Amino acid sequence: MITSEPVILNLKNVGLSDQQFYQLCQVNDNWKLEQTAKGELVIMPPVGAISGNRESDFNGYIWLWNRETQLGKVFSSSTIFLLPNGGKRSPDVAWIANARWEALSLEEQEKFPPICPDFVIELRSRTDSLSQLQEKMQEYLNSGLKLGWLINPQNQNIEIYRQNQPMEIVSLPTTLSGENILPGFTLELSVF
Image (cartoon, rainbow, N blue to C red):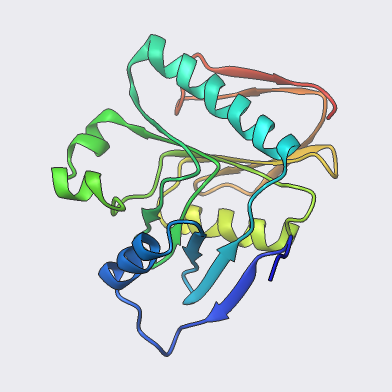
């Protein structure tokens, strides 16, 4: 079955452990899998070329900034993080400060790290549900995320998520700041 929307299976009464989820991902490496904090297994379809190109650009911007500053580690959308609230999530772009990353054991770093990124970008593709992405952003916040951007080309805006603050919506075009999480980083975004 080919679909452009995620398939969601309710597994909350099944009790899929972190290790079982890891093994499930390893034996189904052609699928992009996530698990919500509510226990739902999300089978994500591949993104189209436009979304894939945008995602690659955003990852590149963060990587270039980090190459200059050496303040942390940058991760692609292929990386799954075991969030403290039980979610197993894979943001489009993620960044973790060095001290937090280095506190993990080598085994934790090699598998799905049990840590919430300090910064994430989620890019809404044409077929993504906005409400599901907003729930995902809230999961990150509940797990310790410091700064997150939900980039929404369909609505021509960005939702900015910060710890202990209400979500802020800014319209495109705009310039985003990494604030004190990604010091000195700015991203100019025009209309998509």
